[in-house]
Each structure stands twice: as structure tokens, then as C-alpha cells.
Amino acid sequence: MEDLLAIGMDGEETNFDKLFRRAIGVLDSARYSYVLAGALALDLYVPPRFTDQIHILCQHNEHAPIASALAASGFAITQSAPSIATLKAADAKGYIVLNGSDSSAMRYALMHATQRQVFSVTARVVSPQALLWLFLESDEIQHHADAIALIESGLVSPEEIQDLLTREGAGAALAKYMNLWADIRDGRYARTYSDSVKARVLRNRKNDAERRR
Image 1 (spheres, rainbow, N blue to C red):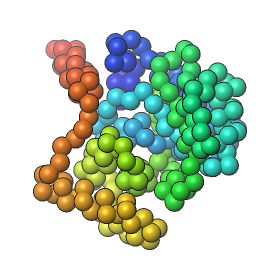
Image 2: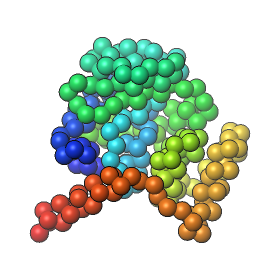
Image 3: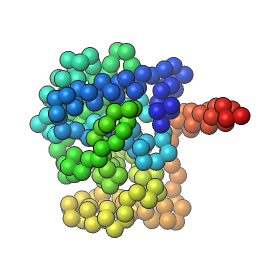
């Protein structure tokens, strides 16, 4: 995963590891409650795909203070909304997407974070079950493919996710999960990774094969 994210789609170094460590350092030093989510978290559980975004979920009342702390450490806020902010560092390619939305899925993700090593630092990372719930709540096409990848990984018990979504009253997410599971079982789906990402993966596999010779 780290090798995949070290070089951007343009072939240039991304300094993505530096971007990540700086952001996590800000959060940990101030003892903010957060959890890493999105594609970067997914890459810890399934074969990785390229991403240039670090998705961080935080408590609703800490969103503004965290955004300010990141800005003070050298991140520029490029977009801002009441509960979502996008930040960029001048010396690294990639973005921080800070989400402080208040929803059952977000609260569950924050409460059930796990500790994982990412780019040589320990970070709070969303659990597979919570990440799947977040993907099921999203309308983004890419998250449809991400949910399928997570379901296929076998890391989320079908019984547990169904029980969780039923218990939390997440009817729409449960219906989407059941439809995805049926599509997987019957082979009626196709992943939607972009052509550029597919090409990048193929190049990496070719380069790895050549290095092993």
C-alpha cells in the first residue's frame, strides 16, 4: 500500500506518508477523538487501490478546532462547510478530508476504532464493520465498489452487519447491503475502479515482476 501511494498518477513523488504523519501528529498531540476512514482505511483490509485523499472522521463539536489546528500546522483549507473541510499541504500531493457530520454511522465508527500501524505511526482506524456501514450510507459510485470489496473480504460477518443495521434503524443501508450481497452471490456486479487506477495497478504489477527477476 505504501509503495502504491508514494508515487502519484503523474509518476511524481507524493510525500503522502509525510502528509499522513503530520496530520495524525496534530490530532494525537491535542488528544482529539478521530478515526481514519475512506479508501486509505479500506487499503488496510483489502488489496489496495490508489487514493490521494486521507479521510478523517471526528466528533461534530471538534470539527472546527481540528480544522484550525491543521491549518496552523501548515495545511491550507481549500473547501469548508459546517461539518466537512478539505485541506491541502503545499509540500505534498494529496488532501485531508475532515468530516464531522453527526450520524449513527459516524458515531459508531468513532466508538469502535481500532489501533493500526499506518506509515510507521499508530493511528485510530475504522473497523471493517463500521467502514462497510459508512460505504452503504454513501451515494458515491466508488463507494459502491468499495463496499463490494469489503463484503468479499470476509472480514465482516453477514449476521453481525445485518443485526447492527437493524438495531440502529438503518433501513436504507440494510436494503443496499442485502442487494449487494445478492449481486455478489449471483455474480451480477462489476467493480467501478477508473481506467487510470486499473492502468496504475497493472504498471505496478509489471514493475514488481521485473524487480523479482
